[in-house]
Image 1 (cartoon, rainbow, N blue to C red):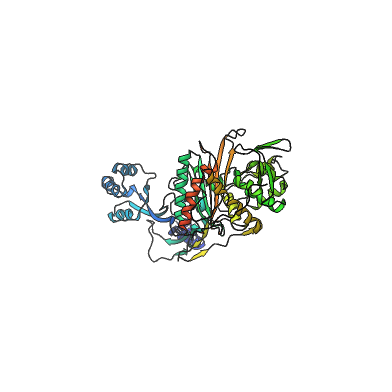
Image 2 (image 1 turned 90 degrees about the horizontal axis):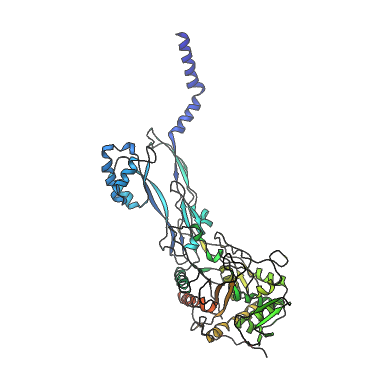
Length: 568
């Protein structure tokens, strides 16, 4: 007995003396429970305050079948089914076949009102946890820009999965906090116990440069033109050339942010899709020729319908015509491919490449949208660059651009030759409502002011020439417009040797004597008509006219300056 008692005594000494501190720590850990405190995700608004994305609180309703007597389950199921809008049989099935013995989710994303109704019933074994979800009050408006969110596990934390929601996730999400509380054997919190608190870092909201009314109009026009021309897709970008602010970035097809399936359909066409720009790129060739090739707007050229360069490469104009004499201004205004390949001879391939790069071709625009493409622009002397590329580049073939890149090209011309970095985010707003503007976008001079003025003069001849051909889409009463159409032949998917499809573009600047808006339209693979003026022109006219009115830009009532297009 003495030996047995000595063993007990030794064990007590060990437990209460030697190991007491360790057991005390273990006991405290068992009593402590970590409760996550989510940071409410910030929202996204348009420049005029229109809400594009917002976070709302919801609840996850769950049951502990063990705490619900078997005899009471039909009654409990019936009472819960009503507010949740579910059949009683469905609730009974979940109670009888729970995901785990003591836990089964009955519904997620339940509104606060519905959750309150269920809470007031005070049903045994029925409880709820707060959660959050993203709402899009204006549906798919600018969804290709805004993106969408997904839930992390328990639904209390949202993260950006696409678009600006993804790029600015750290700003919009904030940082969750936590607290440690003491709980009893039933895991319920013990009142007035010590709490270790790690506070949340409040999220911020984004204010975009997008103008909601213009965005909506561009969305609808894109959708209509795709239907009318039976095209594969359409993109429309509206930009302020002075600030680089994007006022609209529309596309069709777009997607529902509540159900972004398949994921591939969530791509932003304006930044991810690459296409041949066609004649809209001729302005860059002319700019290089004016500054590096010793050309002037009055430089004269003989322009036949077809021409062979270097004895190997044959090019022709879009429509049959007799041999004519054009000035450089006339070549651009009449959009002659044959004239443009002659202009390209006045500059070296390296100079041509450098001007394309300076205008933003071949590099991403850094808007912060996933899968943004730099385009396709092989450098002279590298793999993929062929001897005839210098001529093809001159009229917008043999390379690939994005819609935002081409919008920026014409914004640079409109801004007196200074390229301003395109931007979608105007700034952020904190929880107190204080707005902090974004850093001013970077800018740099690309061409001389004189070159930009000469290009604007040449481009103002285009709407009148198009109107004479029955396409008056650059004629907006009261406003001068500088514009350029583009039609590119592109290979059908999987058929690289056959240029069987077309890309149609129309880019314009208004008012031309005081540029404030650039509208760029691109429609890919239209069926039937395919010229840029007849396919993309109507979309340009409608969006530009609407944007001028919406932004309350006063008419200039000016006339396009005269410049000689025909050479002696």
